[in-house]
Image 1 (cartoon, rainbow, N blue to C red):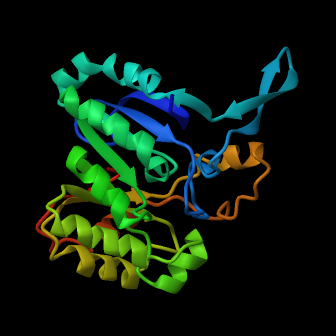
Image 2: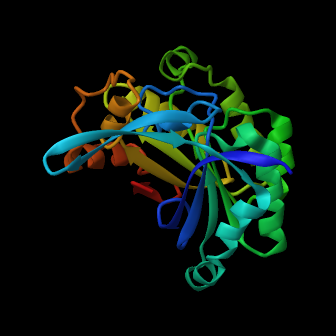
Length: 265
């Protein structure tokens, strides 16, 4: 029986698509963004992470394995257990990661099962996959949450490890095939948030009919402890979180778009 590598399943999510959702986190990602808030998601293999517990003033180190191979039936059982909540809230299931398209066969089977049971589906993707993979999943995906990070190919490769031409090509493919897309921009101070980059992203999405909303996702420090536990250097520790005033300034750049623009998704 085919299995997929999953590192987390979270119920009652409200930021990964409409309504109340179950989010399935796939392990493995083709990008290595220096700001990644799920560093444990990057490798396409189970891996050990150190966790520290305190008891009676003493600290104990525990080794936790992140990532478990799970069957289609096992994962779908988790999804199906929430159907009454999906129905009441007009929610559904979101496949995230990592990058779910790296396990496209497993993802496709889950999408087909969800379609068969009339469950709304969203795929949260960095966009770095083959056109053939997008073509396979498109008929079974109600919503794409599609990241756009940097328009400059050189900067994109510098900060994510991959060029962006494949990503942009896939966005235009979704436009040509009448997909429903929410574009998400991770706002990273000094990297993705300069006016040149944001204006270039706006120019890309403005004529696209498939893009129904733009989400601006502000950088935060919540992943810092994960990097420490995984013995990975955290290069953005010096960055300060955004102020509300700065986020309002950034949002103004997109004020001539004819779609909703949200901060935080």
